[in-house]
Amino acid sequence: MTAARITVNGQDMPVAPAAPHTTLLDLLRERGLTGTKEGCAEGECGACAVLVARPGTHEATDWVAVNACLLPAASLDGQEVVTSEGLARPAGDAHAPAALHPVQEEMAVRGGSQCGYCTPGFVCSMAAEYYRPDRRPHADPIDAGTDPEHGPNGFDLHALSGNLCRCTGYRPIRDAAFAVGMPAEDDPLARRREQAPPEAVATAYTRDGSTYLRKSTLDETLRLLRERPDAVVVAGSTDWGVEVNIRSRRADCVVAVDRLPELRELRFASGHIEIGAALTLTEIERRLDGAVPLLAELFPQFASRLIRNGATLGGNLGTGSPIGDSPPALLALEASVLLADADGEREVPLAEYFTGYRQSVRRPGELIRAVRVPLPLSPVTAFHKIAKRRFDDISSVAVAFALDIEDGTVRKARIGLGGVAATPVRALATEAALEGRPWTAETAEAAAGVLRTEGTPLDDHRASAAYRAEMLGQSLRKLYARTTEAVSS
Image 1 (cartoon, rainbow, N blue to C red):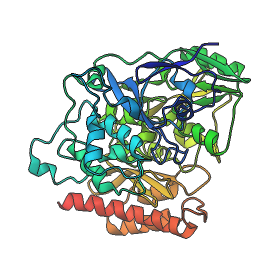
Image 2 (image 1 turned 45 degrees about the vertical axis):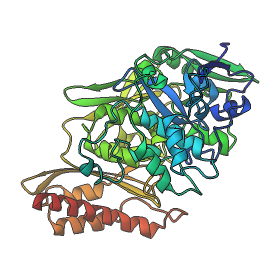
Image 3 (image 1 turned 180 degrees about the vertical axis):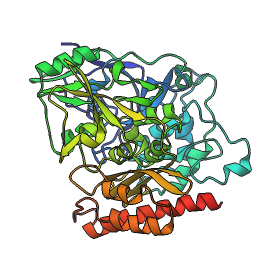
């Protein structure tokens, strides 16, 4: 058994004697770091946010904000964590008095904190954005004022989409975010980005009959899963963490795959793009950099930045949820999944992957190694998410479109749907109603009528079946309006 340990605010912190299911949040609070709060225990409020050193996109290391309430403490074995307490500069001597971090200072002077419960989480999310290596101030201050979600200092407010405040109101928090400058040259956390983050370590942490395991390679992991087909496989733990917290789920064996190098590659080939199943959505978004427009439209609507910093495509597909946001987009892209086990690998079209509610063709012992998106991409794409909140919400209906329109005629149509059946589905009848027909208002209206009948929507607390059906039709009308506006302009 390894002695799992985490570096927290520069100090060594053993995980023992905590149980393998103990969250990082609970571990921190038990050790006296009570700035990290529990609000929802589901990753929706951000009161538990902390910073973790992860492999960077533009620098060696990125400071990434994550929900400490969802991550098992053992999953951070060998890793480096900074909490709200670790951001401020401690007192050294008379020439180096204690000082607030610039983000903390702006939150204080601009009235961004009242009761203070949510403040440490906001501060950690803001710090992650503060240290984002490609954040740059706007060159033209006039242009900076035209985008309400990006400050003149280059601060992206979407970094705070997973943080909720119930008493202050968001204007002073926004003011604080837009007031912070760039990190000073001697800022230790900024300089830390120049060095590589800690390597993922093999972990075998056992307490009270439960075990948390992380192997070094995919082959080792697949052999382990052959021996332990009952093991729960986790990556970012954004789904399993909720099960542990809200439903008190426990597992005899949890196997982590989030740091396996073989699951963290993104490759452009001649006929496809291959996306590693353990890359986080934030990593995919930044590495693709708009190369797949449909995914670029999906990502900002997928939960929050805090969740996207941990969630993976492999996890979203592995849960088999009918309301996951990535399956509709991947169905429209005609993606396939690469399933690996100890005997080898097979490729399965995503349209054939789901077999029932939270069920799939994935066999015991198999992992999703990667998602493969064929090239070339359809030029007309859109992702429509119908939910009660703009961000950080579960879809009532999700619709993804990918169309080839040549000389005014729909040559090819692929439409993925979520939230209208026991599984994510392709809108096959609507695709047939579009293909070979002119892209006109009449065709769009007739196809919208067909789209309303796709799936088997239900009445539930998120929406009625009638509302879901109506939203399906409206989504196609919206797509047509957008494409014709683009042509006329």
